[in-house]
Image 1: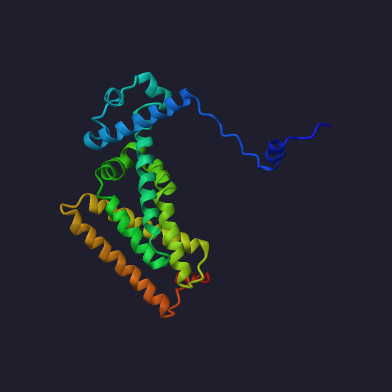
Image 2: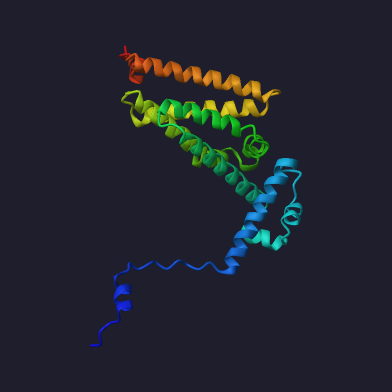
Length: 240
């Protein structure tokens, strides 16, 4: 058996690098077309609203054919949903980035709240997510989309805060707290987006929720026990 050259011996000791799949030009073009459609639709839905935006306007702005649009989407509602998902994904990414500024769960909750209140002042978020999302997607689909993004963040923050408080809560109670805070955040977002003076509305919402969080933290640090939900159930009366 012939001996290997020094170069061959060196190559034999190197770790094998996995092959990176090559993306075809067609796939790249398809992805860029879809991105252009979503980007232009986002602008149109923000400026004109869903009802006033036509598919013709979207394909013209994106500089593609209507056939290209139908290659990616079944119609205008599907385009809207893609825009909705993109806005929510961007919002979640912004909040997650903000949350990295602190490791303290209580501080994280306030940081996340402030980041969210900044987001709900964005024109695209207000128009697409808050104002038109429920009507265009339908309530059930709207809630499904929210739970994939913003609800997950709220649930994560609530869990961290309650676990830091040393309360030993069941999963059902953690879910209950998350639902309540998520409802409060959703209502806060809507009130800010429709306020005559958003800056004042933001300050009012932050004051109210920060006060609630401070109260919860004070109770936890004081060792006040959380009432048992079972104690609130009415006693079963014996049949006479």
